[in-house]
Image (tube, rainbow, N blue to C red; front, side, top):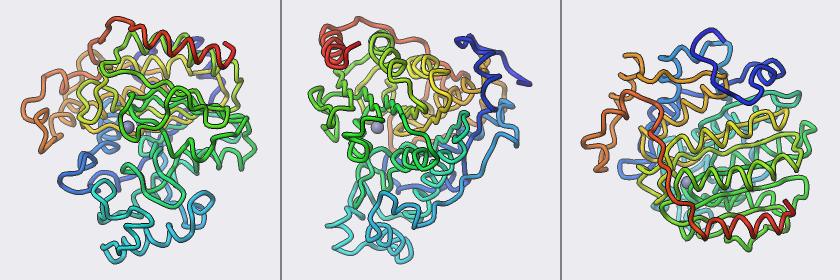
Length: 389
Ligand SMILES: [Zn+2]
């Protein structure tokens, strides 16, 4: 690595030597595309990560891949042809019919018609499908535009028109990768991924999500046909609690599964300042989970996911890319990176009115430790017993 400090990865040197250099899949389509003025996905996310990474000297051209747009046929490996046709037609006409709305939930408040309603999700999905191919012989890939884990075969769901994690996992399978561990620490339960891989004994799915938050699926009793561990957590979920879940459930379970590939969905909406959840995590919690997963499997795909505060998303997801490269962010950002963060806008949200200084000058949050509540201890114990850890 040419710049930055090497962080304390577990057996980091061996890990980096054994792997090819990590690849970042991105695209300029995500810079200006918006779901509309009042939608949570009006804020830039992937472009911030690209700009910050470049400002830090972390994104040399040979590690960047421009995301291909998935062909409609590739999307029908999981989605119905009727739905893919509908998305393309709605983009061309910029209107959804009553049937599009009724059958596919296109044109609802959560899944609105917007200018790139097909090309934007098809670009994120194209990156994830390509990642499955590139990982055939091992490696590490980051596709922060991916992570649309609510998408359903025949309909849009929860801001997700397509389900790129499912398509990535099908692509891995197509290229001979059998055992996949899917780890999801987004604030919301990955109902779409569970629809795709529930009951598959060669896929382990672990989700930590806020209890009773939309879509309200993923109760602890639900094992999705035997291969899912769902841990709903109460509001106020803190760094200490995530550390406990990580060390007593996620890491031992993934290691015991001996996966050929790990797909990690690193939604940023569990961070305290996110407007859509009620968790109280700092971005250190996400980083520490990924650090623990490094090196367990010969293939790693890291996807974005939710995250609706533009500073929380940009600061976490840039650190994620740094971690994959063994690079640690400086305590105080260089001017070029600070400028990227100062240029962000969060219109229509009180958090955008007077952002705290550290959202501009640092990537790392202060830790948010707290008590380990009994209900989390009990939930982990129940899942440990069920899965024989
Ligand atoms: Zn989410």
